[in-house]
Length: 56
Image (tube, helix red, strand yellow):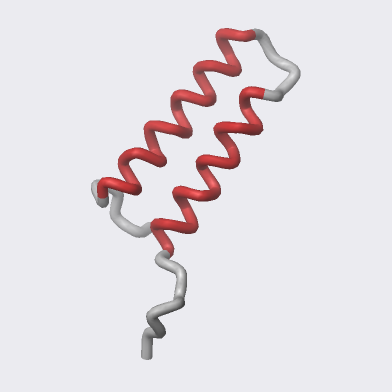
């Protein structure tokens, strides 16, 4: 039985990738590497929020 307050797995994954994106900005790497990692994780967040990524 699902509860209305239960978290959606895709929302949890989106939150995790959003946090990874922010962590990438603060990493001890070059600017281009940090920006690339940030953009990678945020593209996953956008796909998850749009419902394009299937639960794995």
